[in-house]
Length: 107
Length: 481
Image (cartoon, rainbow over all chains, first blue to last red; front, side):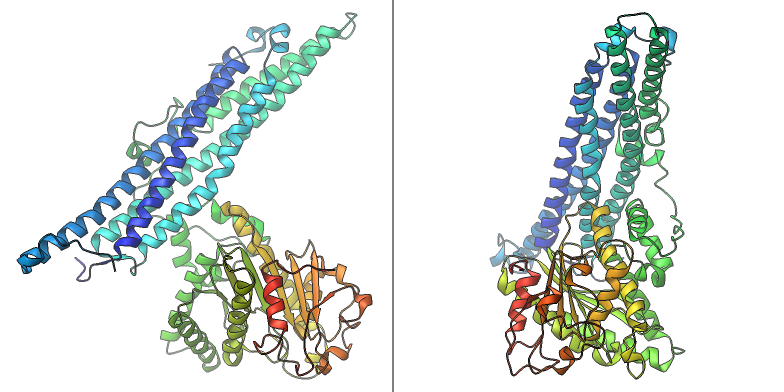
């Protein structure tokens, strides 16, 4: 294990927020693809429209899966930031009980 | 599933297809595909920030950076599949439009002559449309499998594209059209990009069309290797040390630095202050004769820094990046300084560098920057020759400073705005050695202010009025005639 662990809590929190925003944007694209799929079916009744709608539905599923993973990574990063702060606060309290409850502030 | 002609829709049914709805749906998917490169550019940018030890270091940081790399790799595969699928949707639209147009002609026919031929043509387009609809799904099979159904989870999807295991560095394209190179790079996953960068840093650092962050990383790898190599030739080592010292000095001052070119053997270097990938205003400073990286990069970077400050003074909210572009081997003695040979070689390099800046942005889905070329002395001749290269000069403005003469007219530089500054105390601007005087009204450039105390090397000096005007030009706040 690396002997140096350092973290800029605000920077990692900002990256978590960016990843969450990216996931939300991709979710919007997935929803758009889903609604577009029904347009293909309506525009071209029959097998051609069905095949096109089938493909567009797969677009929606693929983008949704990537978005879901992005959201999971973002949530993990946000939780890591919370954990670092909580651990630092707990350590501070153990070292000096008078500081128990102080929040770790980002540098 | 097949859709043979015999079982296809009747001509009347084709006439009833809702083609405008189909067109809207196709364009919607095209818009989704068009937005994905910018999405992935932001994802990769976040991944690189996470991998930066100054942000976060330790095992958890490495895991987080790896997770974003995996996400980017999968997103790249999905992007590619969707782009191929979208091409099939485009073909579907073309054939559906053609089929319906012919079906309308069948309905409007007043005599049976030629009707059979029209009906056959309708059937052909219906069949082609059916095939295109099927191929829109087939194009997704690398990420969906044969059923064209998206995997249930990210890890199913990752397993399908073979995410796990070592990634081989892709072979690099030969230097050439920056748009082709930019498209190649954008099509690589983040993992493959890093593999290419580590395996071929010399080539990656020199490829016009690649994003600035990649060239910077590659050139810094080369710089570190050269500095650590006891066998490095003294002349190359001197230049490498100068670049390393100047980069360190700028970074110590809190500025973002990107090494965009490190051709030590060719005595060519380009260093940017600011982020060239995201800046709204970009300026390249092209120097004149007797400018060598080992001795002069620091002075050129000072000029780049002063121009950036002036641009920010003109537009405080703007994100500015300026480049000390020593991207051509500047002539240092007679007869070279009086001939165009170096300018021709430099012009080709400058033209490609400008094209590369635009191409990398386009491929990454980023908006284009306003780009200004600031050329001093013999550097104006380099711009003159850059404009002669095939294709338009990819600059929004060109500024000529102390020019020893140019051929033709300002309009020949192919930039929407051309400015000129020629100080009364600058004898070079009166030489007319390489063509007509650029300060003469007949040339057609818009004059920038100077003062009578200025000399040939004072155009970037904060003590004279030209610098503030240059900042306004770079920021797009100064109108031209």
